[in-house]
Image: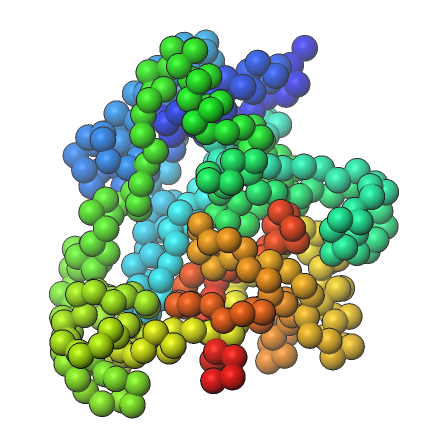
Length: 403
């Protein structure tokens, strides 16, 4: 008897292929699906770069045929263009540093694809992401996670879902999955979260004779394979970047740039200015079209303000905890926070921003120790131990401690 119908997101890579195999072995009725995205047309539909090409579709179809499961290609180019590419371009034009992979997960895989699955009577969707989903049963002892214990108390000891870091710490993708809400977690399967990539996943793929068993992981942003974001934005918008001033932290002009979008916060090389000591990009003002250079100490921040926040744990419960902390004039809830994909989570305090109100209240994160190069547009994700609490977009960094 089938454990349920699952729509498996198939990228053509080894991870999603093994995902389909593992779920099939566990008794699920699997159907493979590849999302046809805009990025593939940028490369003449040739493989060997990042993802989304016709070659990837062929690989996914071959794996599904080997497993004996149905396979579909879903045209989602318009949605990808609107929710990922356009947002990416707009963010860079505002001087932000976006992460389009997070938006792709949020709006495509666990947005449009999940909606398709619901409309076609699937019980869940599955992806090859490295993270773990666990249901917490009522009255579970959570003494090792005081914050989760407090959340459970506020939902009357009912069950709830958690998104956790992967067993394979070198492949953990929980950072890019923070937008998975309780509803999404309840209808998502991530079978690779408890496996080790090189030890388990590639072995399974080789044993099953998958065509992509040795296929390399995709790298970079799929629609900007050469990493030249400024050039891509020029082509996409049809507008050339404008030159502007390079400033020091005193606001003095020390050089000229050929487009502020060519720079990122923390950048040291290729600045176009000769200095007697190392300097770094510490600010980008897209409106004024200026780039500011400063010392490494100018990159350090004590915390950040975040917007567009999404909770993975039950939202009303964490709201109550933050309200109680705010009303008691406390210093925030103790959490771990990441501002970069592969960064080790850092001790911090999570609290409400006093300048905004629900339902669009912003979140403030105060780090125990200064963090380097916090850039507007970066994703920030907070954890209780290895459990994702939620995440959002950094919009402002605060001065370093004792500045």
